[in-house]
Every structure is written in structure tokens, then in C-alpha cells.
Amino acid sequence: MSNGATIQTAQELYKHAEEVAVTIRERYLEKYGDPDNPLHLNLVKLCSKIGGQIELVDSTSRYDDFSELEARADGYFLVHLRVADHLIIPYESSFRLAFIIGDWILNFQDAEPGTECRTYRETVANNTASYMAAKYFGWSLLLPADLFESTWQITGCDLRETTKAFNVSTNAVMTRAQQLNIPLSAPKVMVDE
Image (cartoon, rainbow, N blue to C red; front, side):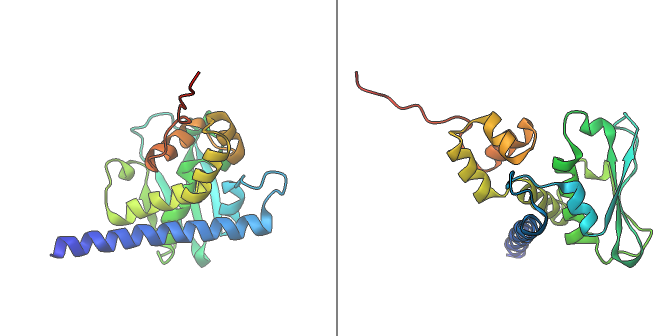
């Protein structure tokens, strides 16, 4: 019974993370969005608006560890992003940055200044509810489920068009479609001749 209660609590945490992410996305786009590209969310600017500063890490080794998220004074935070993780993915539409923003908002806003909140290597095989909630937040901030699904259908399940609409990588679009159990292509229709 306790295990079932824990699962329910985790599911509630994930739902909360999704709702917070969608709300933040909507409020940011209302105030700072580009009217010509209404689905484009600039995560670098969003991070800055909520008190985050970004520094780049030049290391190319996945074995080198570093602090991805660090608490600063007065509610500010520092994000470290690996350059090697963003060779083809713009920082502005990086799932990694969306995840770190979620980690800060959901899990570490009250951390003491100077605290290393999450390290790069700590994310490997991490299945804690707080970590998973930050992942749910990240995906919901980058590609909210309802908005993604309707855009996917409007574009006729076109990978390039959906990628362009949200200004994200094709990998992000494919991953999100699979997470939401959305077919990766339009259904084939049989026509009588």
C-alpha cells in the first residue's frame, strides 16, 4: 500500500511539473515571445529572466564531471552547459537547458548560495521522483503535450515542419512524439480505385 501511495505521489509531482512548465512557457511567450514565430521559446532569454546565468564548459569528455546547476545569492542560479552537447542543438532550444531550469524551479530554489545542486554525472541512471519531475518539466516547457500534438497533426506529421515551428532539433521532435505515443508518420489511407 505504501508503494502505491508513493507512485501516486510521484505521478502528482510529474503532473505539477508539467503544469508549472506550461504556465511559465505561456507567460514568457505572452510577454517576450516573437509574434512572427509564436511557438519559438528562447530558453536562454527565459533563463535570464528568471535569474539564471549560463556558462559554457569546454570539456569534450563525458567522463569529466562538473556542476550543472549551482545556487547563487538572492535567488539567482548558475547553469553550466557542455559545448559538446550543443554542436547541432542551439542553446535557445536545448532540452538540457529546459531540464536544468525545471530542476532549479522544482527542486533547488531554496538551496543555500554556493550549493552545487546537480552535477553532470549525477544525471546518469537517476530515477528519483525529483529528477524525473525535472525531466517532465523540461519536455513540457520545450514541447508541451497538447500544443505539440496539435502542431504535429496540423503539419501532417511532418518532422521538418514541426521542427521548424518550434525551432527545436529533429531528435527532440521524434523523442517527444514517442513519449506521447504519437505516430511518427501520417496514417496511410487506402483509396478504392
